[in-house]
Image (cartoon, rainbow, N blue to C red; front, side):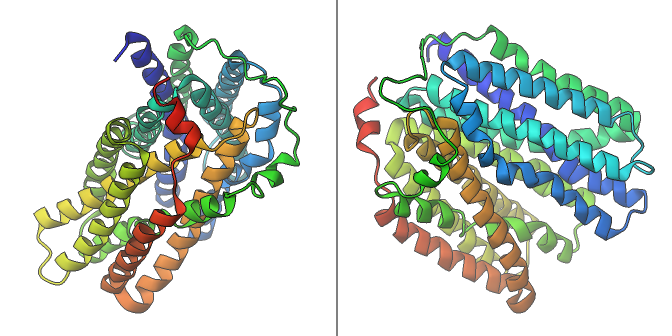
Length: 407
């Protein structure tokens, strides 16, 4: 691969890690700290509010697209939102979680607005700098960055908190977010792109609605809504499943938090290679097969005695299927964005997957309560098989992508 391409991929990887490490810390480690400080479960549940900006970020995505008439403008959005993100994180460190809980929650919410804004701009920046033939491996950096961020944010930072405490940890976290900007500052894309296209009107807020009424978009929306359905339920219930099997928090952290996310990161890289070598259609088939295999395996191995080695294999399959599938969602979402609306259209598609995943995760908990884990694994396997068949109808590689593959 050309040296410039490696710089491009490294830049994207750094940006996606930078946005996911604090997110992982605030959403997974802070609840642990709060519980140690004897906060109620109701208060800990309130912490989920900080994810709201990532659900509603499509509301301000048009502003970023409208004000970005060149790729340099997207870079500025990334830099400014990242600096804002770091400043808010730094300020949180000067408050006490025990006495300033409500204020800290508010600041976390504001920080996630900065993070969500950086994500919109970064996705649009990636769309413009990556050739269609590079999008697979480019999006593997997005998925891999997310997994690495989860690994660092939910594992390494908890250890650092134990040794250095709240304030020092938040200072280090803010500093890390700023360091991630260094590759972006030095990387200059050799694709001298102006995002201002002849005959393309500036984006308006109403364009959000027009996205959904495009020809063939109903199939795309259904594809996005169901694609994760055969794996998210298992992923959501894997930790409670391990708890009920008698594993300690430390053991679960290693099995799912370290080993599982590492397998997800590795699978994301392989998915990028798959898109490059096999194309999008075949890679989507592989993703759906992996999700089906994960569900079937989790059901079959629970029929007998749960051996530790078999359990690790099951965790590897679940996280690998999710990592592979994530790259396919990101890559195909880049393929169907409108000119001048790249950040908005990509964001809308990812938000659809967030909403569907949230609903599936909630439903999976109720289902596991009603029919048990084995029943859940059967249900998820059936869903994965339905998704496999549905994608044969719902996904067709755009002609524009095939024409530009050799670009």
